[in-house]
Length: 379
Image 1 (cartoon, rainbow, N blue to C red):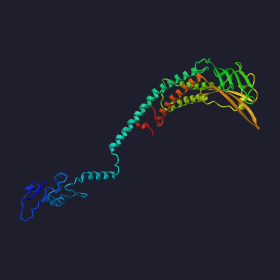
Image 2 (tube, rainbow, N blue to C red):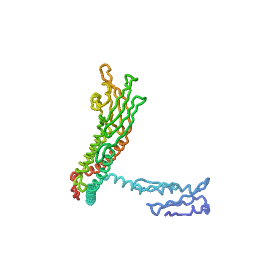
Image 3 (cartoon, rainbow, N blue to C red):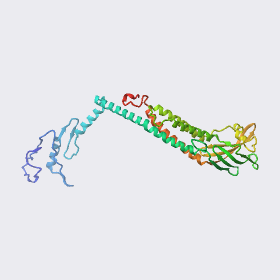
Image 4 (tube, rainbow, N blue to C red):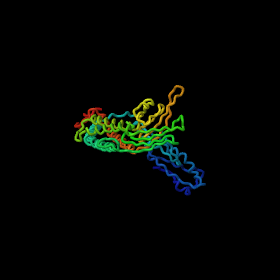
């Protein structure tokens, strides 16, 4: 608290009496608590009004008396000032800086035990999930795969898994401007009839004609290869007994690897045809079945690429002792090929997803059915 001595000059300046040449008595200011000074509130003066002579006289002395020393610095608070030193924020900064320099403390025995129990519980849960995948999900996915592959087999125009293979389609392949025209009858994996007309490059006015008859059909080996690989994939699934309990991930990975390999080979045989050299093509059995036979410098070819049947006519030329050939091709879409490729792709994705899930459990070498402890895991 502030204690004032002498006359109350601040309260009643108008009651001051004049003296004969004597100076007025000065007011002394003291603090009751030197640690926490009590500063008088600021007075609001109207604009244009100056302080009284007595206030101007005693103001410097009052400013000197309200100054104190803190732990880290000396802060002076004047009558008109607003800033105060915050010792609490300084203490927090010192604690934070000391905590940042403090080295990390090792885990307590209780924390280590909690972590060990958590890892053991996760291992047991993983073991339970692994057994469920082996006993339930593997057989469920194999059943779905079998249904998809049987449906794919029924789309093939060849005898396959109960399919009679009597399907017959007729297509017209043309290349503008009237460069090539071919009317084809596709029965199964063979072209049983075709009327072929194409212009020869060296003589644009000359048109070469030939035919394929049912007595000597043109064999498309790609269709039969894809059907054979599809049959292998179905056989791998049929060899798995529905009541068999798998014991390790290696057993499942082995079966899925065989199925995936057969499906990939079957799809590749349709999507990526094997290109034959021109001399091998001219000496093939199919070329000899044409009626009439083509000249020695001409050749034709039929093959499948993705969902299309492609017909190509080749013409060989001898340019300065080097054999070159020109080609002209026409293509058409085959509906059943598109359906077969879609079913192949769906089966591959389903099989790959199951294999990826099993590969997670394959990270543990000694992961077997019946082990319910963390010791069964070998990291």
